[in-house]
Image 1: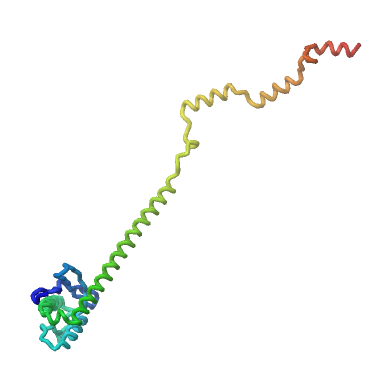
Image 2 (image 1 turned 120 degrees about the vertical axis):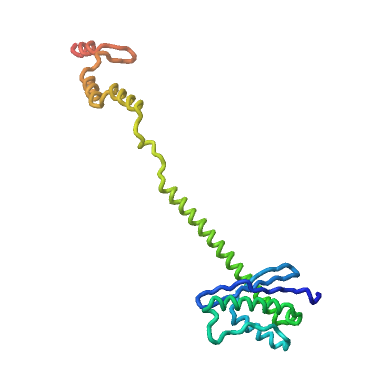
Length: 213
């Protein structure tokens, strides 16, 4: 690989403050395989990385210093200034072949890449969990709606005018049960004068006269 071809270009694009801690977003771009990822790190972590590079005994870009009279994290202007200085630092740092070939720099890149992969997996799991939660919530809503809506019961429907007319006519022509019982009892009192013996019909009066003789 030629010296003017950089493996990684590192830039600092933005800063994010969480409570009293400021994180700087480092963007990593590999010109060989077009790999792009980013990672967020604190100023103290980046300072430790610079101190590790000083063990190489080479000339390094100037690392942004601190302000002894004021905390940078409490001043938005100082945070923006530090972000710009860090961006210049990493752009100059990646132009050094000795730095790029050092184990310290390679471990720094590998660690940042692993952290980026962990963050992506975590975000994907959260999205999947959220999608499953929405799906289960919709299922519960459908199930609740299904049980709250009763089926139409034809028995409870009011009768139509035609049905009312048919019912009234059937009641007019249908004899009551008491009337049927009276007719049955009346019929039992008046026995038929005709009897049937061996297929021959005879009158009851003939049998009574024969009995008297």
